[in-house]
Length: 107
Length: 206
Image 1: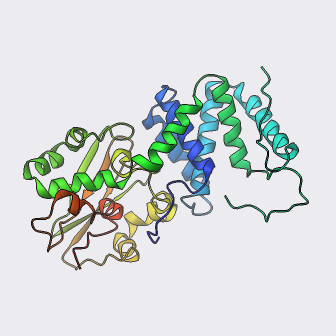
Image 2: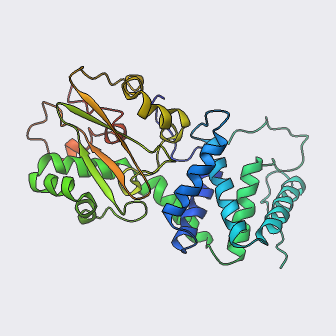
Image 3: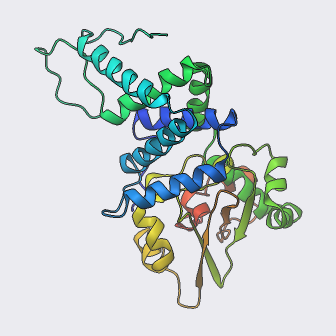
């Protein structure tokens, strides 16, 4: 627990996830009390068997909280998230190293 | 981002981790639905990486040390006091300032998740979000403080404040000796993030 200088976000995905959540809160998708209740419950659940670190473990719980909240609000999101995950995976695996990675969005 | 050693035989881009791909999927979905705007996301990240951080809280504490009327307002209604200085917004709706004294040292934690006064301190450090700190700060605060290099005399009590989504705490540390007559700016440079969480003390001039 030493307080060495550290970046604000350890990983780019932590920052992206944080920004998405703040933006969704600003849109009124959830309130912070609702968020902390859900997020706290998820941390407790994930930490039942091992002590969570404040980095990847913490943001993985955050990610699971946000995914579950969105799917609860709109059940169609589940399939779409799964399709988009597959599309991004495919895009990374088929894009030559050094080129920008993009996916085609199906409507 | 840590990744495997670069391999020139590998023609494709490096595949991000599973959570990173899930975040990309979320981002694509939400932008597609028009719920978030990419420029807004960039602005939020930039704000927390470069503009909002413990320097804001340090300015507040240095002013409280220098201006009795401001200190009284800060201790009575911190949200109003810091709003006057332009520090408000996300997760700053209800801030309470707690002052360290010769007899009581204050320590802040969020046992539920990681509630924290963002407008004053920015994004909490990794250790503040860890299970270890969240559990132990309440159970054995003196031991935790010792690990941060803070050893308090026996006559100083430790009081732990548990933040929530409704109330977020800022510790007003004690002003170090030898700083009489210092400007607010000079004082602010002494004040660390940890001192405003309670896991540090403000060191005076050496």
